[in-house]
Image 1 (cartoon, helix red, strand yellow):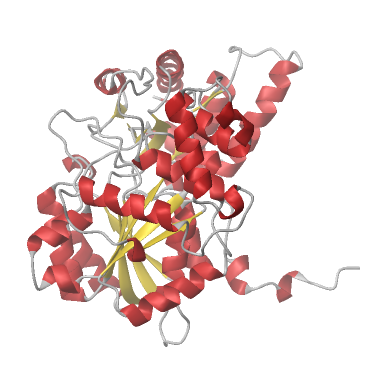
Image 2 (image 1 turned 120 degrees about the vertical axis):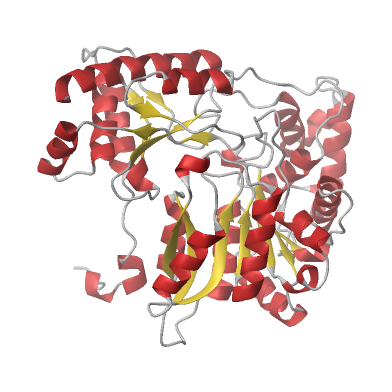
Length: 466
């Protein structure tokens, strides 16, 4: 007999619901098993392009990264000639800064000081010399933990109204779940799809007016480059957002984990911190900012190593003490993730390994030439969010089944074509619009096959429901 009933579970935990993507992923796994058992389908395998996990999609890990980590895990390799000299030297240097020269030891709460210093130098290089202090950098086992820790600082239940966080639509579901799981309220603001998923301050002002009596807005969350929209914010747009945050006294949370994935020829990633610094006083001294990065979404795509960090800007020293206390609850971040962060910001200079990705413009051309599908240009990030212009017959059929139309579409695409993508309803979208999310950081032959299957499925879908 259980001593804990559902009614005794925290209401915040009960409010966390499974994502729309979860049943799709489970069904994809079932189909893979069916295929191995000889069940006949019109396809031989399932292609999963719904997750932000390049290695899961077939991208191979960088040799240098795995060699250094192997030597750190098994130090005898440092003294052998089976690994290149630079690999062995890097591994030895990293082991030297681990207590007991072992990756099995705990580290400082905020992370290994040597790696925090290297991260500060990386940030300063990236931002054209803008100073960065290791004391403002906290390492974690993935950027999502850093995001949650910052939210813990901001969200509390002491006020009469719940704490609100302005959140872009579309966005990935785990951030929304983190806000609501802590008792906060998501204030959705919509990006302008027709203008390349532009973030407009007019929309931010609109939602603040709409939600002012519902919650107490304290933070603004931005994703640049966008996930799942694939846009890169312009410097002008960032400046407007910073001024807005200052006017409304909002804490800025800049999720910049896709900063290494820039595709547009005339596109440049500029960090929120760099823009804030160049705007000068008083804003550069007043606006509070947290910037996030990780090895999962950086160029290495090492999702399983779990390494991330947050840099805090303009926080009161007394407040920062409490951030330290929050990170203290996790004891210390995973050491392998910390080492991976160091390798990410200090890659080998000559002869960097690279992997062939399908030309992004080709992907857009194929999608935009499929009747009933349109896709905004992608300039950065790991995903695209094509729009489905579904026939009314298909929308009605989905409604009869009690399902969101794009979720139903994704289920049919999985069953009939063996392609697993994410439905737009999972990430938030304007009412009456429908989308699918695909990971573009995928090997060439795999993405070509995804596009071929998607096109054939979609044309048959239109014939049936038009």
